[in-house]
Length: 454
Image (cartoon, rainbow, N blue to C red; front, side, top):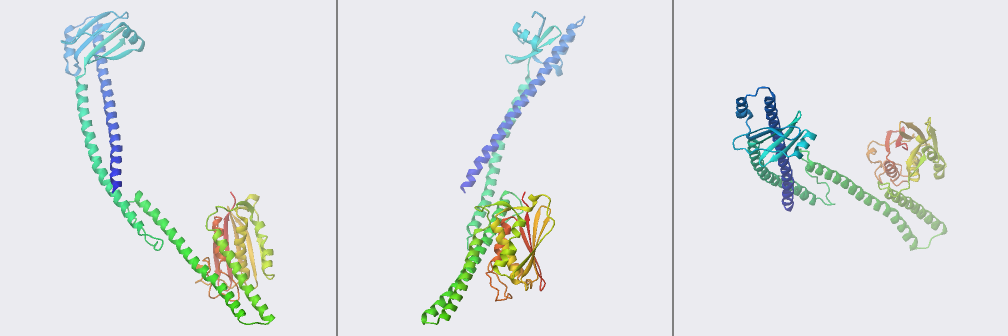
């Protein structure tokens, strides 16, 4: 549980620092606000006194009553008026208050800026300009000092209470977090390459840990699929490779047992040659399938025209079997030649089309197929259609699985069960999609959609 003890101090220090900055900010802004309020009180008292003194008849008793009025009372108030030359012409001090004086330098500064706020001992003083005169008033702000003391006490108390609360909440929060992480770690430790079926529990809180659990489950899903595919591939590959090798070995062992005629040896060589040829095709297909394991890294990619690639298919099929016929149907081409191009590996993509067309010609009774090229929005669509026996519904889910061959396939037709899986992987590697539609006894159509070059 070391994680819990690491999380709690970090969480506490972070939140405590935020609270401290917040408390300091509140205190600083509150002090500034109270200071501004007291400055306005001083200004109001100074202006009111100046206006009364500026009248022709000044009632001294009225001034004294104004000074004692509670809503406008200022403790230890001192007020003085100066003319433009800095000479005092009026002064009034509360009982016990020290008289205030202002230096000529400050008078000049007031004349230039309009007002000056400063401290005289523990009192706040405000000097401001009224007409050609300078009013100087100072007083002791009891309310602000008392209020700030209370505010300090409240903020300090709130800070320590908040820190204590944060420590408690942080402890339980980290305890819950570590418990969830420990639960995930324990479950993950029980997952091995031999058993990838286990999954993490995903709650309903939809928080970060739940998202992490979903991500791990997705990773496990992909790993399980990869391991199962690899295991199935290895089992099938070992079986497919061992069969022709066993046949070759058995034929050679039989031939070694006694001398045979020339015709018998020729038949043996032809049989072995046929098995070795089948083994050669199988090994090449396996190597091609391994080479395109789902990543474009290491492949040579460039832009090329899809119609030029398809036009090579008829001659390529005739090389395999002179009876194979491929009819190309190209619909209206786009005006921009760039829309006829795809970006990828030309050799691999030709291999994919070769395998699909070869299958179509091989299984069709007339050994013929139609290859149609169309352009749909930003997609290039290739349709490979034959009029063969079609594909059984039971076989459809497995046609792209390596080494799968239907039990209903004519045994005289040679194949490894790797052509369509290889083509499917190549199409996906080029960010394309392949789909199949079939009608029993009426033929099969493969549709390949590949994005145009951007």
